[in-house]
Amino acid sequence: MSRFPRTLRAGLLVALLASGGAVIAQIEDGGRGVAPIASSGSFEVSGVRVDVSGANAEAARTAGWRLAQRKGWDMLSRRLTGRAGSLSDSALDSLVSGIVVEDEQIGPNRYIAKLGVLFNRGRAGSILGVAGETLRSPALLVVPLQISGGAGTVFERATPWQEAWARFRTGNSVIDYVRLTGTGPDALLVNAGQVSRRGRGWWRTILDQYGAADVLVPQVKLRRQWPGGPVIGEFSAGYGPDHHVLTRFTLKVDRAETLPALLDEGVRRIDAAYQQALRQGQLRTDAALSAPPPGQPLPTPVVPTQGTDPTMGDLAVTPPDGRATLSIQFDTPGVGAVAASEASVRAVAGVRSAVTTSLALGGVSVMRVVFDGDPAVLAAALQARGWQVTQGGGVLRIRRAAGTPTPTPSAAPAAPAGG
Image (cartoon, rainbow, N blue to C red; front, side, top):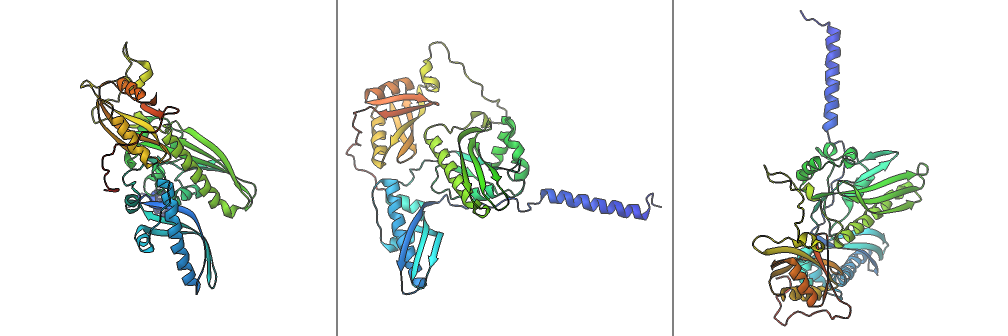
C-alpha cells in the first residue's frame, strides 16, 4: 500500500510537472534575440536618392533602381579609390547583390526614394583594384547591454538594442563583429552580470566558445519621459573585460515609435568609434585572453635586461636567430600610397618582406615586415630615408617628414588588379 494518500500523490505529480515546465522554460529560447543580417560579403552604399518618372509605377521603380546602381557605384569608387567610376548597366547587374529600400514614395508614373545598394565584395574589389586589401580587426564578441528602468539586459530577453545590432550591416565596417542571436546557451554565458566581471579565466572560456579574440560592450541607457513620449538614449562604446570606454554621447527622439531610428544611429556612431580606435591603434586585444596551449602556463611579463633600449619597448627584443617580425603603421591616403610605402620599406637593407595586411584607405594601414636584425636598426634606417618613426603599442608608426615628397613605386610592371 502506498505511503502517500491519493490526493497527495496527485499534488506531487502536479508539482513535478510544474517544476519540469519551469526548467524547460529556463532553457527554451523564448524569442530572446534576433538573428543578425549577414552582410560581411558586400560593400554597402547607403543614402542614394533617386527621383525618376516612367510609363507606369513599375517602370518608374525599375528606372529608379537602375539609377541607384549607377550612383552607388560612383560613390563606392570615390570612397575606395578617390576617383569617379562608371560601368554599364549589364555589368552592374552582375555586381549588385541587393537593393535596400530606406524610404520610398511610389506614384502612378513617378518614383522617389532613398536607397542602399549592396555590391559583391569580391567582384567589386577586383574591378576597383582593392581585392584582398581590407583592414579587418580580430574577431570581437559583441555584448549589447541595454539599461532600462534600472535593469541591465543583454540576452536574458529580447531588447530593441540587440535588434539594432542584429540589423546593422557590417559590410563597410573594419570590425569583425561576432554577433549572437540570444538562443541556446547565449543567455547563460553572456548576460548583464558577465559584463561587470573582470576575471580573464571565464572570459577566455566564453570567447573560445564563440571563436572571438576579445569583447566589445556597446551600452545604451534608455530614459523615457512618459509612455509614448520622448526617449533619451545615453550611449557608450566599451571594449575589453575592464570595459574601457572609447566614447560617450546622448541622442533623443520625441516619440517612442521612433526608438529604432535612435538606436540605429547609436549603433552607427559606436561602430565609427570602434573603427577609429582600431586605425589609431587603441583597440588592442588583451593578451591575457589568449588561451595557452594545453599544459602550458600563461605567459608572464618579461622584465627588460640591462642594456635594452627602453624607448623601443617590445620591438627591442630580437629572436635568437636574429630575424624579427613586426608591424608598421603608415598613412594611406590612396591606393598608390600602399605600393609606394611598401617599396620604400623593402628598399631597406635586411628587409626580407613587407606586405600590407590591413588596409584603410584614407586612414592608417598596417604592414607586416620581416627584418634580419634589431628592429631599432630598421627604425634608424627608415629615419634615414625621410620617415618620422615613433613607437607605441608594440608597433612602429611611420610618417613622412614635413616637406618630404611621397615616394613613388618603382617602374616595374604592376600585376593586374585583383589578380
